[in-house]
Length: 73
Image (tube, rainbow, N blue to C red):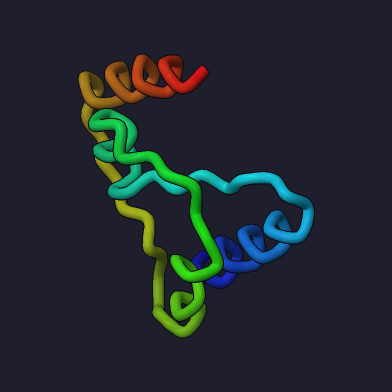
């Protein structure tokens, strides 16, 4: 997964679009921990196992995450 995240950031860097990163997955979405990922953010993640993403799986958290996501627009 880290390799895919890094590849997406590298590809979009050339097109001028932003890839947004959400720290701690749902928890980060709930708490507004959302920021554009830069090449510096992903430079050394492809050699790490697993993913830099984490999860938060409570119904209340998912509802709040949807609300936070709606606030991005």
